[in-house]
Image 1 (cartoon, rainbow, N blue to C red):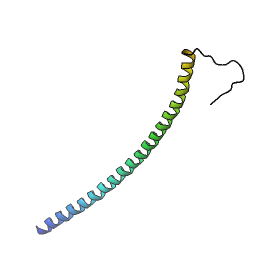
Image 2: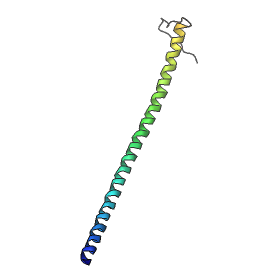
Image 3: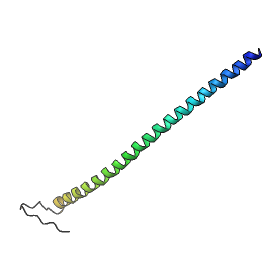
Image 4: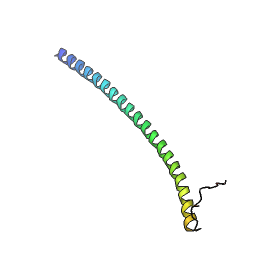
Length: 86
């Protein structure tokens, strides 16, 4: 009877140790996946910022062009020489 109790405890300890190892392995895998997802997120945020800057640059020129054409009744010069001033 005593041997069965010891054997049962021994099996429970072995099973518990295996579960601890499995749990730690799963935790490490999830952590790696989280880090990878965070890198992807950072790259996407960076790209989004660049796109917003680019869109802002383009939209400023479009607004100026629309305002000049509609409100000021301006037209694009027909000649081949265009002088830009700052």
